[in-house]
Length: 598
Image 1 (cartoon, rainbow, N blue to C red):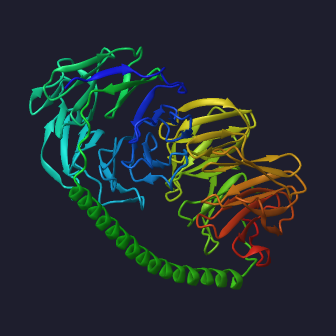
Image 2: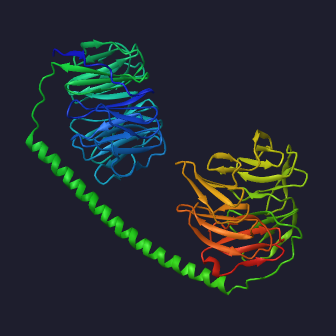
Image 3: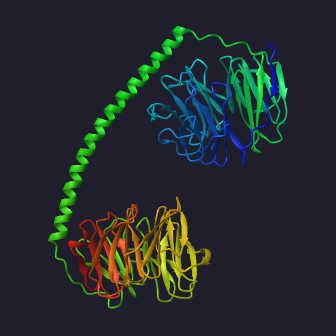
């Protein structure tokens, strides 16, 4: 076979980061590339934003779809206009390293660092069967046999595995190898020495970093950033140079080869001399069409049956929830609204529900624990206040103290945990646990925000600020409350600003007539409670910014607010030395349940 490969046009530009993924459209000329920033580009100039670090691309055999995968573990489908097709396919728990369509297009395979391979139906975008497991390392490559009956995978465990593409069952024992490709229908394996072999025969005399096969032609990228082409005779057919960066990936068709590198360069090569492709066997084509039709029909039946089952389950859930809500409403409306308890004799500031909802902590110069159902105080007061917060696991309660320290208590045994957290020089204004519970953030009137290790009590960091909360994993300074990607802060005069960290959008909640002191989200971030110097408690919809409820009853400024974990109650504390419970799902007409002195 006499093959001639020549550079084709100037290198494509547009990427400013290492290019990790490349695919050639079945039609021949259209090229798709992706880089470490998540940018995906068609050679027509169309751009779209995929997963961060989009490292793999594959065109559907009929050319109407492009699949991509990357760092966020999702597989995305795109049309040729660059628009997403449906929602991302989610199932992997780690980076998606490879995607490939079955030769007849009825399956899409994806491989991941989570050690698994998944099969998807590109029409319904549903998973097909269970994940393929067996690798003990990150799966890095996969390839379908040209006839479609086999799927080969390679992983960082140093093994290559074969799977039946129809049953998704493993075939034979794994064999050593670090990379794969198909050449003339035979499996090419890169060994630990980085030499490519077919049935033990060395195809590439030099170590290679990447393979791409098409029919009887194999392209291999070498460690010296050159590219060589081979056939089954193991005779080099061509050797190409030109890249100044490290070659990251290759794509090969019968008329075109594309190579990309870590400098963002995309080079095209014209391939001439390959024999014309044999016309497809009409019987085999019909058989593949029949298999695809049968598969699609079976998937449709499964989807239908699954929808029926889910509808029945949801009907039952709706009935149970309706009964539960009616029970709660009856309990709330029939309960004594003003059961007075003695307790706090000073303005109450801190308030927090236990994650399980069976305890409520309130604080002025001391911390008191209450049963939210019976409204009885549990045990004697604990030293501490006015700022309090429960650990996400519920086994610790953090409370600020008058000596500017923070103490950690076991709320069940009421025993002090570890040594006091010392360092602040003025009143501590807020305490907040990281969602993992490993760290605690404290803020003080001394103008500092400090982060502590909750186990050792060691201070980990310090920065300027007067309040601190955790928005997901991130510490946000000078905000009053956060839930996931939503952060709320108060503006002098009564305005509250709600910021979406993902989109940057800001909602201005205007309704209070004086400064806001208390802000709290419900557990899922759908509701926001605000209160302050105007003695009014308001509840807002965090999506629309609409005011949902407005409660009055406190006779002095409101200092703190906290939602019950299931969202049906809101607790507020005030300078009037009371804590009040408001039934959030009944609006303002139901009236509060007041704990006078709580």
